[in-house]
Image (cartoon, rainbow over all chains, first blue to last red; front, side, top):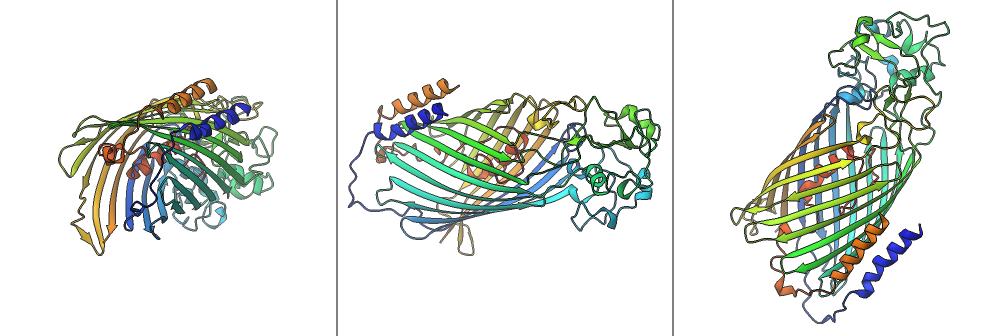
Length: 486
Length: 70
């Protein structure tokens, strides 16, 4: 901790070291924001892979997401700007649908994963098609995430000090968040140097939903002849139907699930930007992030190698369980993932931009990341904007990312039950990824095209293709429109 | 790692005295593509990376919280 305090002091000392500048207070004061601006950004995202975390590290990761973001910035006066930032994101996920892999009912629109009795015909469950590789039609296959962020900034008369505050709210079916934050930015050296300090607190809350077999077993007083399991055959590794009243029966590893619904995040961010020459500038970012609470995802199954395996479905498919050709047998979970209730993260990054000539600009970014779960990562990104006319610019880009695995990660059926923490979430595994992007922007500084009182200032369109060496592939296309009020 | 960060910070701080570019000389620096931040239209690209990767932050934006992601 002393090292961090020392670092912070070192950073703040840059303020004193920077050259001071006398500012003429009588000069014309330009408005911080001349007129109201509206940004609309929409995206369509798809992904697929074979390491779904909901089904313990194997299974389809197919997911589609459509999102739209509205940002309205309003100048309150010469110095103050109020911004409303609202986002809605709707997804369908084959992986999440397997929270209840046996739900083939279309009557799940009540959006309640726990209320099985209203729509599931338990007697016919064994005939249903269920596997980590087959999408279920349950309520958990889709969700909507909404967020609202309100922010306010005040700039001093000399524009060398900017104070900001923000409040945010976010909600999805099983997760909600309230956040507040503040920021201070100081400019020095005739605005050649900028130092920023930002702090945020997010008070998040789980409304946990669990893999159906675990939830139902605990709800029905651990009775395999009642509720969800009533009339349902459970198979052992050899495909034999077990005696539910016998000794060797399936049961969850633990009889308690999430015992702390909160998940809080505290972050402090430092930034330093410096003009290096008339054509180059650099900025450094340094964050300290502390998270506490339930940091695991209660939807994600884990299977232990030292516990017997039990299944529901077609006995002849058990030997083929991990293959994508398995479409009709599902393994009952040993537990949900368990992770420490604390995580400390230190990301450090910098951007360097170079104006090469009237046509080409170089934009680069690098980030090193460390956390106390054993993850270290590096991110390197390069973008080369190419102006092909006064109004059109092309944006080719490349991004490489690599990370080490969390101490608590192991693939499907490779954890042992004596471990304190365990996850088979491949987002916490060792991997590297490459992302290739291409986009274009159209800019009309005179805003000749109008919609109502809004003049179209720019359009940005970008496509990115992302490939991970674990097999995950993703594509995203985004379109952004910027309007200014007449 | 702390030493590396300190070294980087010191290096950056030392740059603050090397040159002062006047306002009227900032025509190239004021080009929209020279912005020292991620473009607004990259919002959802950054968002999916935060979900699919363990690392986040140090990009001038959000560094955690607000979603059930990593």
